Length: 67
Image (cartoon, rainbow, N blue to C red; front, side, top):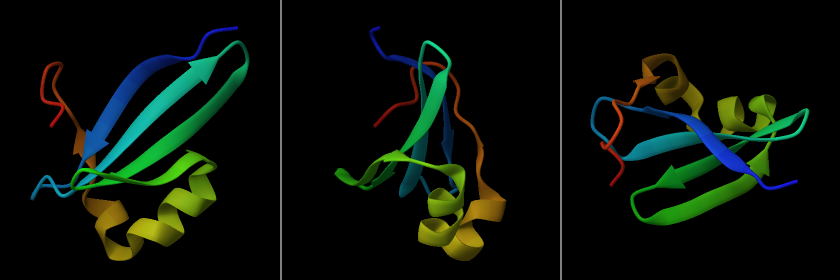
C-alpha cells in the first residue's frame, strides 16, 4: 500500500519539521532538520527524543508551508 503524507508539524523557528505518514493501518513520522532527513519511519518516542525540548513547541503546519 502506498504511503501518504497526512500532516506536518513545525517548530516556531521552522528548523524542525515532523511529517506524519500513513500506509494502511501503519503510521510513522519523518523528522527533518533544515533540509536533512534525520529519521525516516520514526515511532513517536523517537521523535520526542530527537527533538527534546523543541517537541513541546511543535504546531500544525498550514498546507503549502513545507520548506
